[in-house]
Image 1 (cartoon, rainbow, N blue to C red):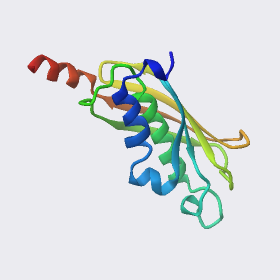
Image 2: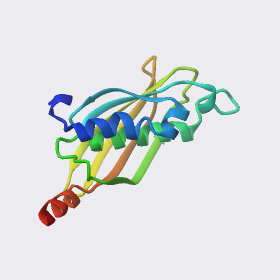
Image 3: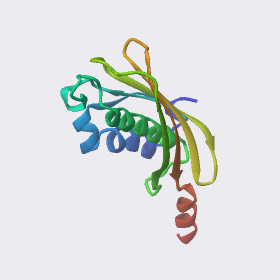
Image 4: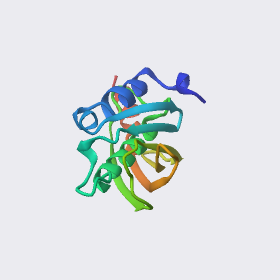
Length: 152
């Protein structure tokens, strides 16, 4: 399945709301690729995300992974303008430092339930070195859309 299988609401949410909100703009997030259940999100290696050792701060890496997981959860044909969601849990394993290269996170849906979506995300630097991995549980309330539709 490709991005063409996604609703306009899902595509808009992924590109313009999740990754490009004020925080995403501040830390240099951008979406490189979207298809159903899979996304690539990039974070620029800018001074705003570096720690005192000139290594990408772990919190910035966590934000990148959370954003990739969120975007992957939203990469479903079922997302509507009325859909709401939030991260329920995020477990991160840091593997190595992110040096002065952009980080690219791949988020992939593992399982979709009625409300909860499980996503694996992996962050690598531009040279392909593994920086961190995570598993996220995301609440994407598609049932809310069905309830709202039933009220109409």
